[in-house]
Image (cartoon, rainbow, N blue to C red; front, top):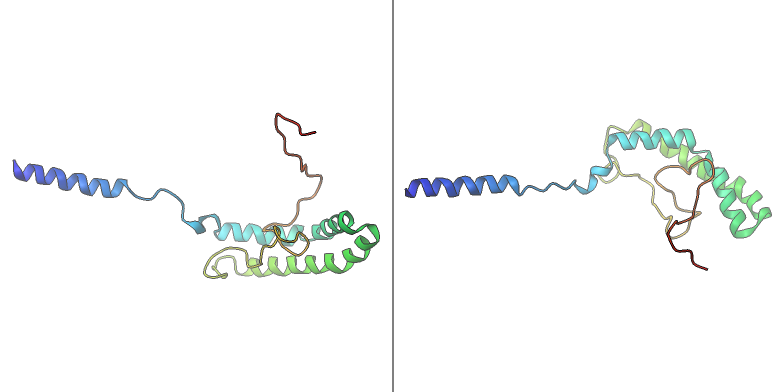
Length: 139
């Protein structure tokens, strides 16, 4: 009887150790080699949308004459950076290069200053709705 109870307790403990496994994804699971490859292809294919995005942001902040001149300088710089990162990530997509992970190697500063930061993927082409829909409308 004692042996049966001990075996039952031992079986319950062993089973419970498997049951209490962590089911959450690890922090780096979002970024893998396939996301790095898709980021590289997107940077190469749509990196030129930075010209339009830069022009729109500067036109909104500083006006049209500043937007025309800044698009040539800042927009071209952003396009070249996007193409460079796209080429780098295309060549190195099977290998974790940034701190041993597949995260994007560029510093994301969109929350601080929208002109100088880079998002993970290039800007989207077309009209994007910035409206937040809800049941109540603030007046």
